[in-house]
Image 1 (tube, rainbow, N blue to C red):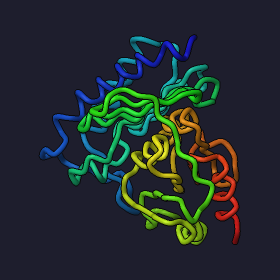
Image 2: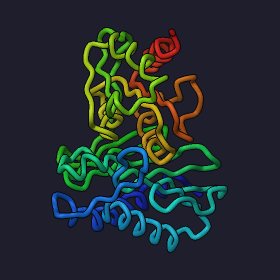
Image 3: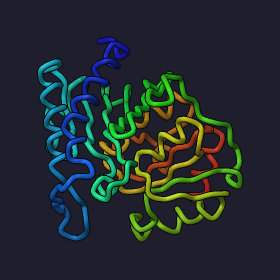
Length: 260
């Protein structure tokens, strides 16, 4: 199957998710907590959007597998597997902030080959296939690329929140933060899109699931950047993740994370 031919289908999935999500954004929507030991919110918007995307995939590609945050895995060993996070950034969603996004990724034989972050409120979509990356939205359609930055001292860094790092990993992250020029918190998947489009340089996070990152890897890499685990391995299964716009900077980030 030609991966490029699936790009239009990714837009259909994003449209379907948007139809489920937007009536509930900045509306009175109940919030459930999925975690017994913290706060992991989920809403009807999360569940309805994932269910709608799963239905569309099942109709169009019944032999494909699906891994989703809300409804788990179905044929996860298939040649092609869709990896879905209907609302990455549910905390932002329930507080009315438009920095959440719908993540739609595709694995081929376990490798991320296509991905999109769609933000229906702003009308923005950031996507890539590992070879190129593109944006559509209010600013018009265009190719996106990372920016050169070979120095931590000149870099802009994102993480969702230092409070989300496990205690053992926090000092490693803090070494990177102390070394950069600027650190910003709280924008979830938008952070990776800003790296991919050349507005920032680094994202460092820990404790990610596959559905948090698979969709973003082909976009970052297609724009010229790198995404790996902290030890330089594949990021497709989640875990401790580092993403950079300049591949030269990536090694410096990994060295700093490992410098204890």
